[in-house]
Length: 156
Image (cartoon, rainbow, N blue to C red; front, side, top):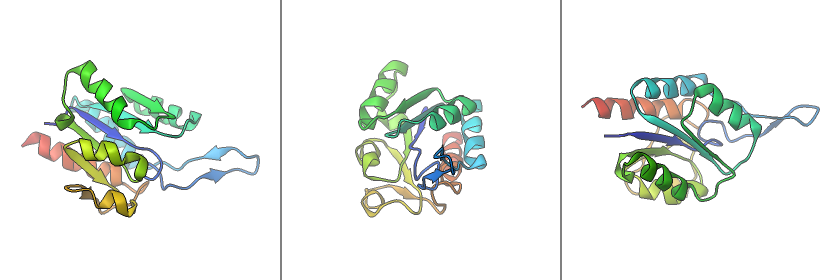
């Protein structure tokens, strides 16, 4: 049973593109349905986490809006972050679901039991044994797709 759902940001919750306004303000495009998925997880009693190697106020604002339980920004050691959460809430990596799309997600994806990647993830991620390659691309509902699969499994 899954007790913690964690997600990467760029290329998973977003389309992996960086947008800049004329004034140089950085923008990211998030999918509303993915956000609703986090709300559904919370209602099901599943803890949530966002982990990104980027360090930007945009992600902090998104995490605040979604009421994410754990946020790690500027973190290249995603596995250590998740292990710390597991210790804190007394669960194992077998009770963690993670979705990521790029090489900085590789170590964590290999460590957890429930793993998925967007359809447009890099080849190295798609080659991880037992990874679920989703139908949707990053930023286009991949997170929500994985959440729905996770919730279905948790009910069985």
